[in-house]
Amino acid sequence: MPELAAEVAFEVPFFDVDVMDVAWHGHYVKYFELARCALLRKIDYDYPKMRDSGYAWPVVKCYLKFVRSARYGQQVVARAILRDYKNQLRLDYEIRDAASGERLTTGYTVQLAVAMPTGELQFVSPNCLIERVEKACEN
Image (spheres, rainbow, N blue to C red):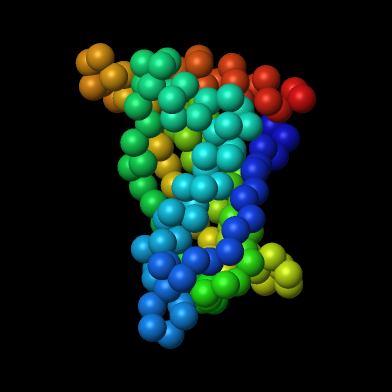
């Protein structure tokens, strides 16, 4: 499978930092989410389309590794890379300084499909995801 990824550039806002101008660690999950939404839009399966397809995709695992601090006003890039989609939605992430490319944070999330009407966990990803990913990889 060719690499399927998306990036979002943004400035670390004042309301995300502590008194030392360092982004609070909990906000990195939000930064991952920005990149994840960009990737989901790229495959035409953003959260409203997930809901409309009858599946919820809760995050069941989230891992972060902090390398360097992001600071107030810093221009950063959050990148999401699709690693698995057939049995789970596994995305790897990198947050880098926009100017230097220096790595700030890495991590991954795992989401599983849950049939909304029944609440049943799906052990294989539904076709509505698989078909969109495969179509995006062709383009």
